[in-house]
Amino acid sequence: DADGHYLHMTHPEIVAQNIRHFVEVHTHV
Image 1 (cartoon, one colour):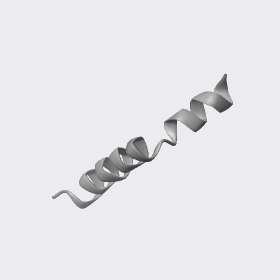
Image 2: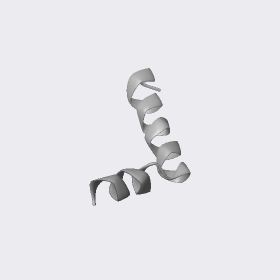
Image 3: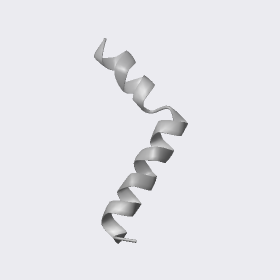
Image 4: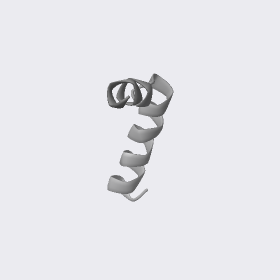
């Protein structure tokens, strides 16, 4: 269900990947 999918997507490794991607996109390193 939607809640389960949301919880899955907040898995620490996925969060770390999202943060890394966000930083790369917004800092243009």
